[in-house]
Structures are given as structure tokens and as C-alpha cells.
Image (cartoon, rainbow, N blue to C red):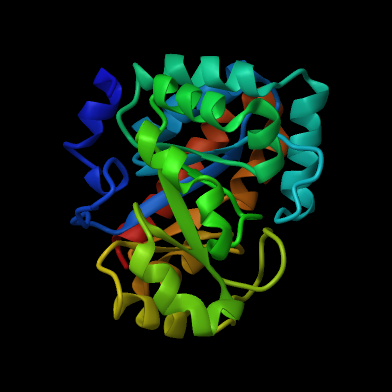
Length: 272
């Protein structure tokens, strides 16, 4: 374990070990696309968001076929790829970042990039860069054996997901979940939504009967009001497309508008 990872235990240990400890606060997790608009901006943005109170950051590996993503994040992936982002460059950047921030860092990616890179090589690089976990949205729970053993071997938490379609599988998934349970708020792909109506409260209530790890809601949360509402029924919220949209709008000058936005989200989540 790197010095950066050991430091995480002080503040957000539920993402840094297989048996999590619940945080004593509602949590804000932010998703950004790695390399959008460039690697340097991603690096500066991660540091700035950590300093602004974000509790954990998901970095999406740009991919040509991100099937769980809506148009905003699809476009971000394409911009990153067009600007030369690669998995190796992201690993190198995150290794630099780890010496500057103590909050958990996670990769969100798909099975194809992991297999192309090589499972053991990929997870070794995750460990060496100080990453805490990975989220793989196109890997069904029943197929987690594709990565579970290797993740444990290299000390990387494999985050499980439940969705509105998971009703009869929530108990099974929750019992084995580690780090936190990613609760998908809505059917379909990622993206900002004016309303979130999916019965997510029921899913979280079911999960809580079978696990004591945090349940965080993602997909569709686009402003402080929604963040507060979703944090009120969960242990935290995940915001992605709304942040990525700001990166698209401001490009390399996105640091200030993004940090101001995440500060409002953090205040809303903390007040839930």
C-alpha cells in the first residue's frame, strides 16, 4: 500500500478496505472523464475538487463504446481520445495526483479496455497508482468472477451496482458488495434529468436489510436540489454529467466553475 492510500484511512476508510467503516457524514462523489479536455486539466481538476470537499472521485477511462453513458459523457470520451488520452497516460497522471490528495480515487471503465490492457497488468497499475477501486458497469454481478479474485489480489475494491431492474437481485448483490453500493437511480444511460422517479428509496431500503456499507445514488443528479433530495434517502450521491458538461463548456478554464459547482453540491449533500 502506498503512502497516499494509507492516508485515506483517516478520513474515508470505507473505500480503502474490503470491510468498510461507514463515514460519519453524507458523501459527495464526482465523476469526470479522464483526459477531457486534456490530461493536465484532469490532474488540476482532481486536486481542486478534493480541496473543495469532494469525498471521492471517479475517473472515466475514455472508450469508443461507453454503453452506459449518455451523450454528454460519450462526447467527453471522444474529445479525450481525440486529444491523445490513453490508459497509460491516465495511470501516470493519477500516480502524480495520489501524492497530492488523500480522498479515494476510482476508475470507471468497461471490460473491454481491461482485457485489452490485460487484467493483471491493469490491476497492478491501479495499485501502483494508488487507486482505491474500479466500477465496471457492463459486468453483471453474476459475472464478477471475471475480476473479483484479481481485485482482491491487488487490493482494489470492485464496486457493485444495483438498478431499478435489480429488484429480485438486490439482496444477493448487497450481501457481497464492498466499498459502497452504487445505486443507479434511473433506467437508461447517464445524463442530467429534471426528475428522478424510479423507486430508488425501495431499492436502498432492500439493500440496507443485507449490508451496512454506504449506498450512494448515481445517474441523473444534476443540481443541488436533487443532490440534497437523493442524499436524504441514501448515504451519498454521485454526480457526473452535470460536471462533465461544465468541462465541455469551459475547456481548460473549467477549474473555477467546476469547483464552485461542487461546493454547492457538497453544501446540499451535507445539509440533507
